[in-house]
Image (cartoon, rainbow, N blue to C red; front, side, top):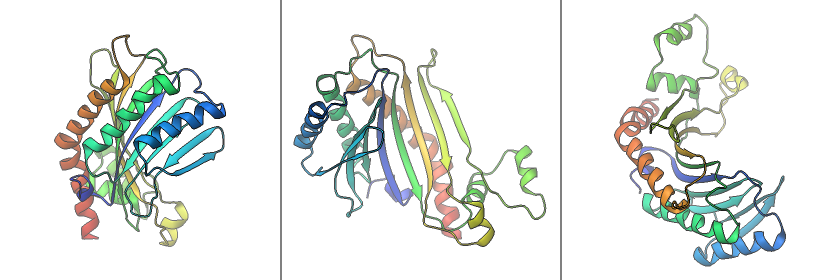
Length: 247
């Protein structure tokens, strides 16, 4: 099991390239792009379309470990769920990005942002908002509100964003997504939707003429892994894991 996979129920590594201009939507260009991906990852056999011009190619999900790639009007996405290693996921995203200038006509100028996200999902049948507040705590001003007699936490999804360079082009964001409804919290009948923690490093603006997407992806992936190892694992993931184990 991957080191991050041991800290949560599901671990995944995603890449999103947001473009300033529309990606090709014609049949020939789309199919040729995904055919080139399939040559590099033969197990990606399931191709399908969604509404609003989204096309997807993915591996079978039965094993719980799979890759996927999708294109939208102005976004290219690549994901690896429960990867064998962090490096293998990064290499997958680099391979996809290396194809884009030739297969999708995306130049270094056509970059609105390049995102690298590490996602951590936790299965918990209970009030996920209360769980997050218990595991991570609250700032004193909000904590007093939570102490109101007879109250119940309906939404607690802290988010923190910071710049990692002087020109604010490289930014990091830590965010939480809870998936409880008011009905579930009131009735005590919870579903199987998981609590998610997202750590994202994002590079904004066009690349220079000497930069390449795959190299820039490697840079922000290294930053993201460093943030995870030095801060998020000890102060976020492990407290969540321990709190759930005690329930």
